[in-house]
Image 1 (cartoon, rainbow, N blue to C red):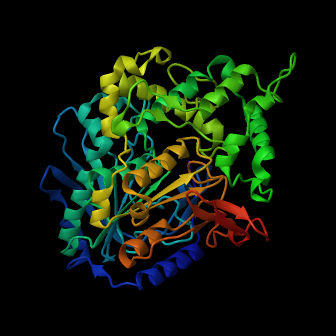
Image 2: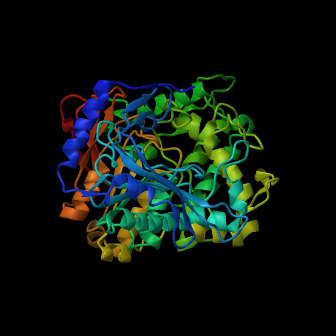
Image 3: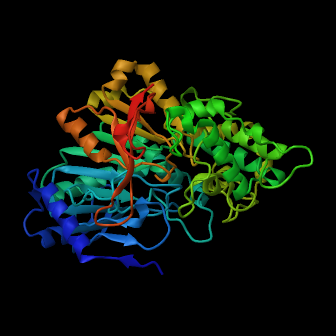
Length: 555
């Protein structure tokens, strides 16, 4: 059983920070008696919304999970007393699952709301009580800062023993997952806010990572007037492309192409040897991964004739790496004219796995070669891609994935692309609404390719012009960071950056990311780097490698 460590000193420190933050802006209390107002929210509401429960919750202290896991997932922030509302939205198709949601209403509200995105294939209720994407561990939670927070399961519940894509066999469930659930829950949350406080939110924010990052961009593209500030961290922008490229990368590692952990370290060490000095200092971070992508050649590790073992690579293994790095080309264009997936970059191959969330082992290769059906020891790209091929594109759970061809399922692939791919670069309506968008890519990400986000941002600049894009959008790239925020400095308070930009017109420049010890209450910073606006990256000047001031952002 997972154990939580709670310290009274941590609780006092966190609550002091909460009170200090909360006092910086006038607050709107829950109307009347808080407990009565809260419980009175239960019951039916318009538009098939059902409130299953509404009850006041006591304050909870900061705690740290005593287990392995992604850095942010181990930290449960302190939260104040609030009204917890659980509800669901009835489906139209009686065979479709309901859309479940949670809305958290603070007793003292700052007039803002924050919707959290999901992850993977969702199927788990996002509570809105955790740290949002990229958030520093020592900052008060959004709820503690006075935000109404909320999330959803996206309209289905993952079941033990079932592939996570099973729900996609139902059209309504899949459309909810694509975009409808987030819009419906957003509107339900606004209605609850009006009932609880007597007015709508002054400003609305959305923050999501991975699948949640796709959801974030989807909100800007499909519902441009619904949110004022959006963070899309490591977003799965070209969803169809990712599933196909991930499946291809799995197929090429079947049999002789699979690469074991010792050989992964061999590759990672070779990448560092080839590129670590490029920024002026050896710090085990490839600050310029784009340049390294063009420099590093896996064939330099080819086994000599008669050689074998962990200190070299076979032709099949080199082909697998080249395939991972190469673009995946479709035989026909997808939504918005996209006809390929850009492939992955280099660096971070050997990032230690945190609860199946780091480096090649977690995302690409697993601890055993791919199998059909996918097994728990396979890489996530294969589990997601192979299952997506069967349940989403072919809609045949018994399909031999090795025989799948997208042209044989063209109509369905195009349907899914129209639903799932958040690749529309024209965000004029979002800009006209006054919305602000931040995209954050991690350059050692093997769950999805950071180059998909880079290309999307450059397509925005091409479509709208660089000057107009700069008026409302930013792209930041964090070198050395894997999908979930480990491997290099990754933490930055993007919520405050968005609030300052949306509400005070303070457009962000280059920022700073930090790496923190998961040791409360200090959560001490161990190293920091500039977080540069694309296409700049950190160049070493002088000073300690652990200090952001030792680097500057330059193209």
